[in-house]
Amino acid sequence: MIRDTTIGAKLWSTAVWVVVGFFVINLLAMIATVVIDSFATQWLRTWLPVGFTLKWYAQAWDEFQLTNVLLVTFEIVLTVVVLAGNFGVAAAYEMARRNFPGKQAVMLLFLLPLLVPSITYGIPLATVLYQTGVGGTFWGVVLANLVPTVPFVILVMIPFIEQIDPKIEAAARVFGAGTFRLFIHVLLPMLLPGILAALLLVLVRTLAMFELTFLSAGPTSQTLVVVLYYSVFASGVRAIQSIDAMAVIYMVTTLIWLLLALRFVNPTQIVARGRSAQAN
Amino acid sequence: MSTVTDTARAAPGERVSLRQKLALRGLDGTTLLVLPAVIFVLAIFVYPFLYGLWLSFSPKEGGMFGNYAKFFSDPFLYSTIATTLWLALPVTIISLVVAVPIAMRMRLLRPQRLLTTILVLPVTLGTVLVAQGLLNYLGPQGWFSRVLMLLHIIRTPARLTHNYWGVFASLLITGFPFTFLLTLSYVTGIDPALENAAATHGANAWQRFRHVFLPLLVPGLAIAFLLSFVQNFAVFPSAVLLGAPAGPTRVISIAAYQAAFEQYDYSMASAVAMIMAAVQLVVVVIVLAARGLFYRGSTAGGKG
Image (cartoon, rainbow over the protein chains, first blue to last red):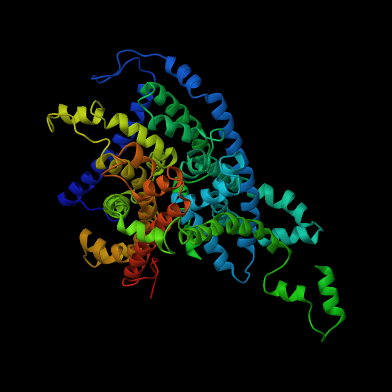
């Protein structure tokens, strides 16, 4: 490891840390503003609110019908997680184990929904969904959210499956295990950490997926993030504290799952999703 | 499985069965596992896209290219391309320029986990929450303006929301962590032995960066630029919530959304979405072509 001890190097290093600090402080202060405001009785022209109260949470819960919204959100998210898990793990197994003609093309097919921004394909997708009558319903939202999550599960799972020695599977085959038993008794236990990580990340991504849900949701199939968007959009109507209270509820529901997911994966994996694929 | 080998053994010299031929090329029962996902992506991603392309050529009025002609003749529509580029390009370039030195410094640091976790926060929370947070934080009565006034940098509260800068800040906050973590993974992939070798030969810090790291980083940085640019170009919720969606931050996704859900002209909306995809594609092609001009090769050190 090279250590520079010149004044220039020290100044440079300090400058880099100042930029990092500035970014992190602003980020945390922004989150803190939302949290503090959600407990504030009144917060105008002062550094901190005049007093603190919990009433905004009760109010937000009633105004935005959050019981209902949270129920719908988790129904949608869990359906997406289960379906994406099934489609994704099966396809990832094939992609990791076999070389078949057209594998590169199939890989590209799975990469595209992750690379193209959701709003670009979301508008044609919403058009098709509305014309087939699925748009605006529960299943419309689920279908739209599966577009980026199925490829995401595949890309996250491929390296996990490649780590497992094929000889273990061969041994199970020798002892007469069929594909199904092989999967349940051999692969599933070994893949569990990977599957858990992939599914938790899908859960977080679906909770936070605004564009696709926004474009495909009807009045009864909005998730929490879409309700939050509409309330900020019409922010003149309601107290800001009430919107902030909902924002905190959204933050908490998302962060719990993120913290759980981070026990299984490296944070950079959330971002560098296509890297294992690019290496091929 | 066993039946295939049995028939093959029973009839030597005869033609091998189709099933066996396929198995030799890697196609057997497990290949079926990939089919549901492929069919799904074809049906719900590729088909809508092609349908959108076809729909964009059958406008409500005018000939085949009616929508495109309308888009490029109405300044209210075609100016959205420039508006969006004017937001997406500076944010992407700034993120990348700032991310490289920080990643270079950070790779020397072992416990990166806390910082990377903090940085993943805005990516996870999403653009809507960041927009709502910034409305409070950057607003005229927010902490940001207050601190600047306390330090006597400005006299009156800065106007940072409901204009260009609000969207700029929100893109930077959600986009920078993404760019940084991607850059960090590329920087840490370069063998430190290469830098040590350069140092042994007397190269100073700048020379080591300029002649050793930068050439090896260019391919990775090009990918980071593209991924981050494409996301920034599709900015939507923060442009509506934090910007001035009728004027300075009327980005192309707003135009597409309004065509689809306010005028119910799905044909026009598809055309705008296709133009959006085309602009992204053009930038991708330009950057990838430029990348081809640089060194591409191993980032591992070795004897040779």
